Length: 440
View (cartoon, helix red, strand yellow):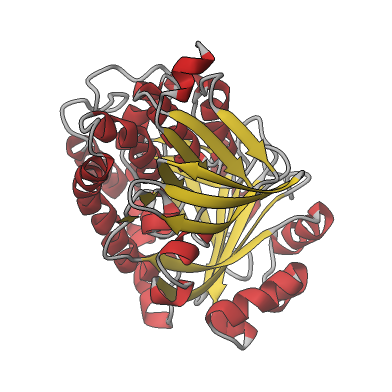
């Protein structure tokens, strides 16, 4: 493009090079904006935890031209194997019973890599760069950016905060975390293990669970195994941010304190976490704002509406939110703030619904007492019974809608092998039907 033509384009800064940020950057570029992305990390992140891409997100990926690069990491005909603290198998549930067969199961890094590789060449990405100050003007935003070569003050026509649940943009423009962060008082710790524990094979999915403590181990295809733990913060003798701080100071120690009495695969899993040496630690919390925009600043993804991992909708919401941002702004070329308002009106119902669903499902995901745990175990036991499983599978297929298994909400057929599963409720592989994981 002619540099002078680029200079005439409105200028946008996207803060954060994750799913929402990269989707927004491509969308804004298509809508005629000159886009720059700043990312606090020194280089592009790879790998990551397991995510579920709901049909709406897959449709957005299709519109961005990246769906061809995405594939499931777990077999659709697998099972989830539940085990108790003694290592005994308590349930085996077919993956196909637990989720929309039109969704996609993958690692977060898969989605970010596809978006990164498809980004327009004209989108400038500045690593090791963070905003230190954001000042709203009448029709612009002034930003102080701290980067490897020092600080600069730059003016943009739009700033997109796509910098996650602990968004710096949100804090500077909308207010401190305490105003918008609603804690579940659950701690989440995730890690990528150096090897598979026990006799597990690629595709296996195992969930050790007890009252107030669960773990999800996914031996995903073509990727190092991923594990994430969720447990009640009170097990570390703290709540909210204090619990996260204690866990972050010594993740392995925290895990051994909470899961040290688990048998079966758990001791080897904990040894793998210690060997891996890198973990992600945080509390499970929702972000709730009355509005995601203020002047020419808008929040996208977890920075705006984080529904928590319990919703199973985070990646889809981030992708759809970023991908449609440029579309709404293009519909209001002379009034960006009207475009932002239309965009928010379009996306708020889905984000609110996802947050509400997460608040309901958190008790099943992480049972807080023995009664809830017993109900959860009984439900999984019923689903493990083959006749009941076939009935539930038929109901799930009917609920999938006209496109059916393998279909997509865009009306296109989903490419072979792209069925998906929910990270909190599904999958494994046929090999899990062997009795080696635990005694029924």
